[in-house]
Image (cartoon, helix red, strand yellow):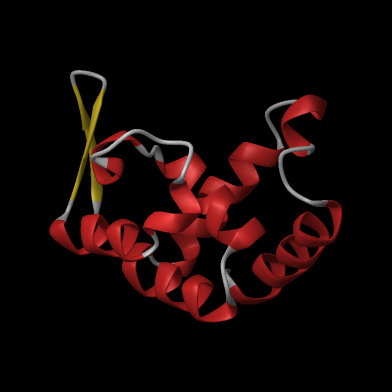
Length: 103
């Protein structure tokens, strides 16, 4: 697994850290070093909402499509307010996409 939580601090593998650093401009809201501050839910949400298709494919490569789907579904199922963090077309598309390809 590429992520572990220890003492409430996220520790990513070097591969995930490199992935985040390569997309530094998408995480403008997070103070440096970004790879240590971005939670997995924020990472998936940002990439799915704002990233290119290449970014999405590389996210699947780094985390695995099933893990990304799990994070996505747990995020949109938390509450009605939380669903609004994903653009409606993005949430609809990836709901259909993950239901088809992440099983």
